[in-house]
Length: 188
Image (tube, rainbow, N blue to C red; front, side, top):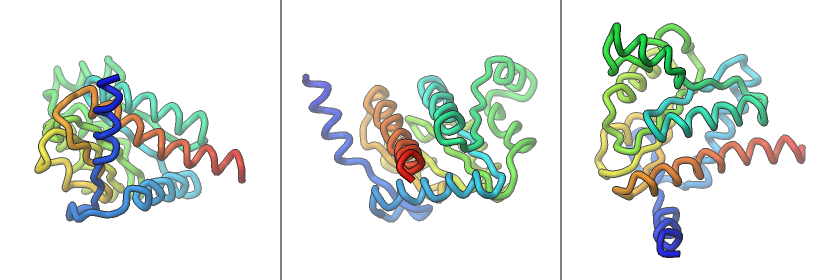
């Protein structure tokens, strides 16, 4: 019960901001993400979701939900063959940047998930996506001044130093976005 009480506090303290990190409404930015994602389908674009470790699992899960349940083209770069090939040949800091260089296009969406907000491979990928004209949504935690937090068009920040709390909250944010799309589709 103690963990659930702590999570309740973490959920209620999620911060969201635009590229300048100025606060905005959680609900408004969830709906902004929904609008961007729906626009991908209409415009023949895709969502690319990346993360390391537990965040990679979230990325794969949400890419699958977007594709299957929402009919939005989505993928994650969590394939072990891809990751080990690129990390061996180019270095781990390039495992997301290189596929983005090859596959991302203007108007695509990158969702970058990092508990610390300091993973070099994630930061490199965000820079590449922005250079290619992609929308960028970030999800981070730990230090309030982490590097990732100010790099996206929309930035969700979880003020906790617990991997579990941050990852559970990132997954909940992703489901809030996906469920809004799915429910609108089911009722519309």
